[in-house]
Length: 349
Image 1: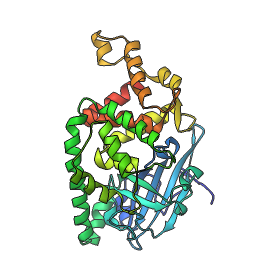
Image 2: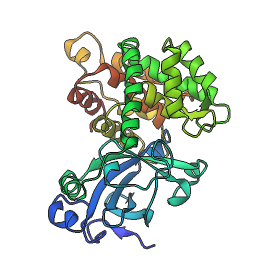
Image 3: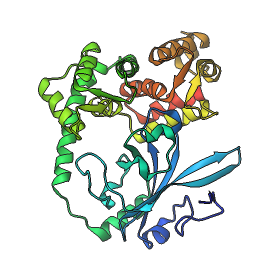
């Protein structure tokens, strides 16, 4: 299919990115959203996606922004317009409906449904996280649809309570040690993953929690495992396990982590040489430098040493490892703007 030029073409009778949605989207029964792929692979995690959900027939379509050179952006088909269903979780097999779309929601698709790179086709399905929603259109469409709550919503609420109880227990153990534990845990999971498919069994996860002194009660662990192992095959993606048991930063914070990595990974390879990180990291405005307690070089070296702990290769950092570092840091910082400032200042974003 011929790519559509950014700003010069339209998608489904609306401009690619517009906020005058009440007349354009609501009247056409269309909800616009942005998304990202949940992946430790930098090339996939940093893809920029825009989608539309059509309430009149419950169909959806997703496009990908692609940058060619400095001034040319095109929009390419990523998921063709059709009716899709959840591929895992409590709603497995059920068609997507309006209530499934909100910031932070996870959509699952069969890998065969999308225009995916070979690296992603190895898995049966992939997950997409909604990062932005057209709230004006959503509010109006929700008023019109008046969807009824069902038993699945109650089950999903109970699932969240199970994870929250575990996260609350681990929060104290992670306090002040978030970066070292999260980076170490990510590296440890990779070492246990002998098949390199991102999946580990129950014994592996129990062992990892023990090694990092993050033990939870047998009852809580089993409750979480029943939710995570929804296919009943005895193996769970370790990224999914970590997000459920430890939690993750919100999408506002995550957007800045992705921006920082995309700035560093200008060749879009999914990993960044340590030498480039050293060149780009600016410690001039670090509080310890301003106060005179540390030099710029000391702060930079300390950051690199901590980051290297997460790396499986001594000379480069992958997106997943970069994300682990900031996930750990996020646990220790309460205010969103404080966290964003910590990212913006050294990376110049």
